[in-house]
Length: 424
Image (cartoon, rainbow, N blue to C red):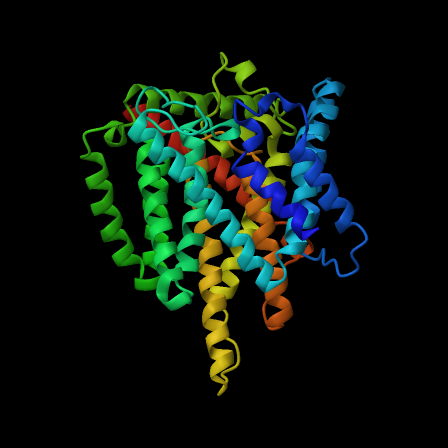
């Protein structure tokens, strides 16, 4: 199981099967690796499915299918089962594997190394105009990759997810300091690759991730001061990264798309217009916001489920950061808890990296989110085994919380969009 899920992750992220010279082989390596991993997971006796996400993700798939059925397209329901179903299978297998600490650390290293490979490809692309895949620059200036990362913005999202992992691994030392040096170098390359994507969403997300880290370490005041200064420096850059004005044509188009998405929600409030149909109802233009996309395409039913799925991941990370275990005179136990808190910060920052980029991209259903969520759930499951004092999370206790937050966030988005339209 462990071997096959590692192969699957590598095929999802590095994607050698999508290289032009190999794309014609016709062998579905990625689905094969996933099916083998899932078949190995099925007979496992030590499954722990107590985390709410284990129920929410299949429910989200069912909500996608129901949305199409309600809108009169039975074929769409079957299509969602075949396209989103693999994300559900991968989630169950990966969350099970990530519950073991040593395997979790290996998974973080694999994610970070895959990000480094894509960063190296982008750096070569920027220097030579073409990477080893044979793929050139996007728009003549922005790095890109193959497959699901052929958009520079998607590359930026991946880099923001794996950057905290590389930084965590750099803190572990070993190999006479060479391991720390290696991961520092990897993190620096990933940050540089974020710049090479020229993705404004990724640049803002990097500021948000940095701000959250400063907030947890130094407090909200320092986070605000550093955030304002960094944003001012970003706006001053003589490139498209400095074009953060809501009145700029691309930004204005995003705001218009958000407003259109909210109008779609008002016309289909319960189950939405159907997953994947936003562009069909908006002149082939996407939502440019993962939250708006789910609200419009899946209505309040799907959005409540998706929001809860995201929310529990954040709550798990914060629960560890806020937890105070019983004081111990054992130096080993103290060191272990310090490492666990560092892992919790890593999980929090990786999720913030996804959420901040997702606010500017339509990536509600991409596999990256569900792989990251699986790692978070597996990590917290293992944490509760090692530290039984950590809280449990239950959907039964939150039946009011998530619908209320969903409604509040939709109202908040509507107000933000109206303000942006008025000032653009």
